[in-house]
Image (cartoon, helix red, strand yellow):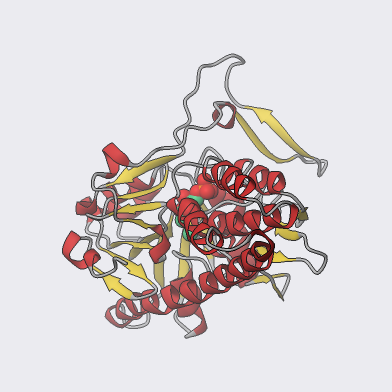
Length: 359
Ligand code: MRU
């Protein structure tokens, strides 16, 4: 998608054997590219959230394995690299999926063949992610088109949480892809953007990408969504996912569950957009079985942003020494979800419909 009118991806292989990423810890204030040259760089980029979003961390892990194989293609390094990448963030299953898929390709190969195969796999995964997200956009745009018809062309208001746009993938995004495709088709749209404390992915990233894409949006505090839904100011909620179980429970950014509850109470459709790589058919109960990442309390007691003098800085917002807890994701049960949008189509949030997506 676009930054200052220039088509941009979130990750790409550089000509000299490195990998380049957009550093998402500096957005929206600074557009900075970072070079990854080692496995440790890739693990660090995922852990510090220079790259984030379920599909993007999966693709970054694939490039991390390619960097590891360029350095040392032995069995022991392949195993150590895989373990380090899988441990870098626990909730989004796309990470383990990408590592397992790459391992299945590389393990049977003799060591000298692994470097080229790992790079080819990473590039293929990046391109497949773009194609899957574009297809999600087309499948989701049909939901928006139906609402546009029922509203007789009046402006449609979509509410989204966190960032599940192109910055969370290689390009296009998941929850925002239908918005971008609908925009291409001339639908009059406006997006309510939850700020998404504590790391503010909505304010920093979703607002950034919508602005550069020319989609009208309004930033709201995390607590405003229910109020807007009660007033009839939201036509549709669209969110992404980090892991979806066999019965359709969804782990996504902390706060998603509260939006789903409000949507259910007010009759607003609540759709989850995700590629097949986000489904984990080995799990049933999201609440009992999905590992929820716990991040630093400092993300809750402090905020990061730009000062009036232009400098980027962290400020403290709570009394020094306050105890704080920081679960990064929550689980929305299937019963609160209107349906899933994947690259294969739209599916009811029920085991029987999701079963068709296995394998
Ligand atoms: O902690 P983050 O920023 O990686 O969390 C991202 C989300 O929760 C997204 O909604 C999810 O990964 C889907 S991204 C297409």
